[in-house]
Length: 109
Image 1 (tube, rainbow, N blue to C red):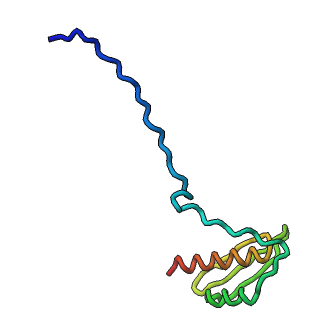
Image 2 (image 1 turned 90 degrees about the vertical axis):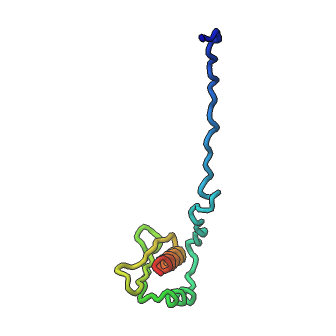
Image 3 (image 1 turned 180 degrees about the vertical axis):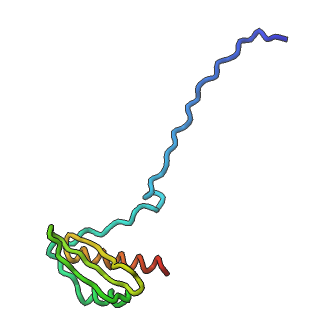
């Protein structure tokens, strides 16, 4: 039997917008870097030598960069290349390099 009713137009229903949380809201955002040390900040060499010893470092080098700032390199046993970091100051370069070396060692164990 044919129906006398006209088909009803379906109302367009817009889907709710998809909102994704930010990586920081999920707790997976990039680690916050410490504030840079002042350009005239001094390196605590006693603490640095202790950290180098704790890492098992077999050598290190500190260079002044021509454009300013510094580069610190650390050689770890069994690694083909030095771990290195550049910084606006010697203190920044040393701090970042030692943290990078610690992270690499932790990842390999």
